[in-house]
Picture 1: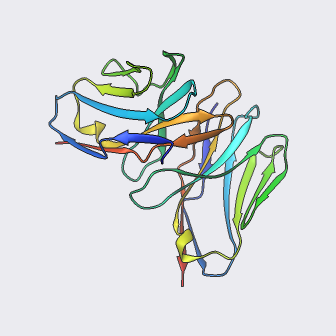
Picture 2: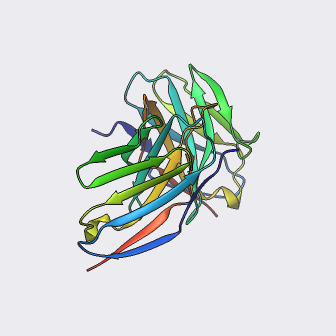
Picture 3: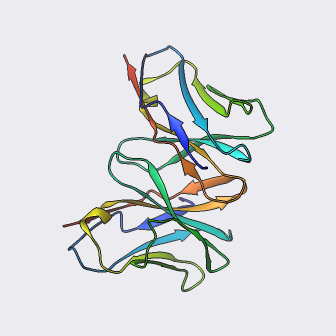
Length: 111
Length: 111
């Protein structure tokens, strides 16, 4: 089946690290993605990871992939107020080219 | 210059009317997609379009919906007879091996 789940809400203090978690069901997924959506805006690709990797780091962003548990996480270091947004996890199932999105995690960064 | 341009940014239409949403993916990519996001909900796959044909479609994409790439450039989504529940943000996307780039969306409001 194709399903991606995320927690709905995360609140952190400015300067702290944020960790957003995601689980997916398709073990044959080739790529997994993180998108950011600010209020009233479109979907901005933050980063992606290939399924044969465990970790990917890109400046303040670290993606961890546990393929055995089908668990993906996004860590944002030194979280800023501008990071407040909805973060969507997404997978590309092995049988398809379409993106399947999670329900999104709303990140609130408190000053 | 954005890689995927959508027009209009906002469309208001009366129930039962036809609407055409437009997307200009500035590239030579072959895979294009339409997604929908009802306010406050997850991003849902509608249809994928490859080599001028529908490659895959979801249950949402019923007979009221159609897609075309009439001139090899513009990529359109037509809703023949809009319903109130068609009110949503509609995103066009193109697949870029392996990233997916989304347009800024068209907000469709059916009244």
